[in-house]
Image 1 (cartoon, rainbow, N blue to C red):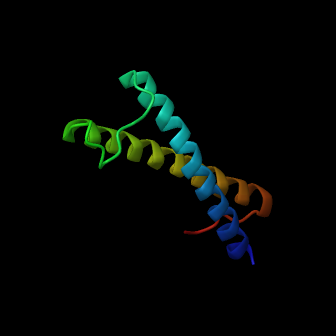
Image 2 (image 1 turned 135 degrees about the vertical axis):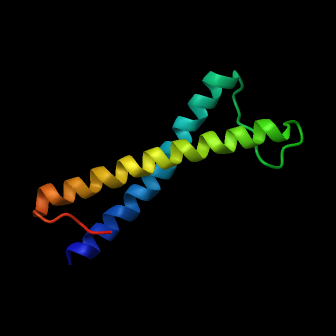
Length: 87
């Protein structure tokens, strides 16, 4: 039962993390590049370098946000149940 509850909470934090990382990425990109929109992979107005840098930054932010939320969720489960959820 605990594992099922953790999976449900983990799914919710995954969705939240995806949204949150997108918001953070847009703000970081705006700050760094001075442009409102990040390049899409198929946008003709951006070169390869800018597209790949944007993808790498977005991936790094997503990874950090996801890891932080996963860790916080696991710690919260342990604090509330006394059992740390194994992956």
